[in-house]
Image (cartoon, rainbow, N blue to C red; front, side, top):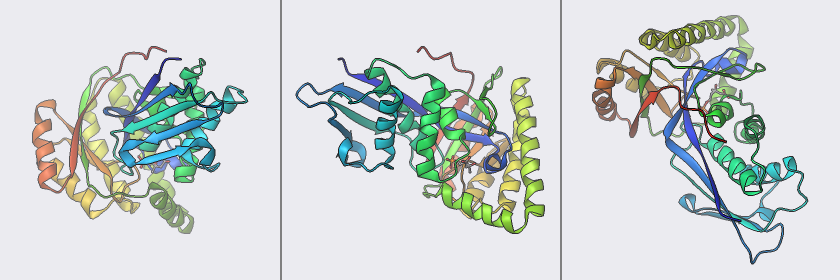
Length: 320
Ligand code: PMV
């Protein structure tokens, strides 16, 4: 059996994070410059069922049999085995690598799961369809995040801009006029689960105050979707600014994120906001493409530890 490799991109949430947990829609886009990769190769000298997993970047090595039932990598491998109804996996090695920043709101955990599920199922001769890849990756996200909305596994699996709403069929979003985002990393690792739980407590204590904020974000998402679909991405700038203010009111931003948002706007971005769970991680700025480098440099001067320039467009359909 030849070695089989699969990759999955990072992602960034354009608008709608947090409110999406409360049933509002959100838009997320893939970030193809950063990726997780899984390579599965046969181990002809091994015994059936012996699966060796290694991630040299993080000095991780383990046999599948030694991973607990709730270990994310073990769940991905055993989940594929179960879906393909195999009694034993052939002896093989699974090698993982990723350039996606961890705990930064860029979908690192979902991308690793998707790459593993795709590479292993293809290695076993039965590549799983996207819907099954995404739903197994979701089960694993539950272990990482507690109560994820499902947006990460969806955008990372389909690797296209998506409008995601809990309980609704997945909707991909065409981007007739591409636009440019600069992504700025605060360098602060932040727990999405903690931000989500803190907001849940605030909401439980005062639903009358928080429900309208979520609804307002829902309207921003619908307007953003309309702006993208109608080829007017320049309208996104003010919508992103409004979304950031609402996220500040929901107490999920941070002084570091706010400082990067302000720096981007001062440098000429037409809109900027935190992205993802907040408290740290990344922010995004909408820019004219010729201003992208300038905005990125301003973000670094304002404290960003890394920047990425991401062109959002409709990618070609993936060949299965
Ligand atoms: O921190 P991220 O990018 O994984 O995103 C979290 C997005 C939230 O809406 C805050 C939570 C969720 O599960 O949707």
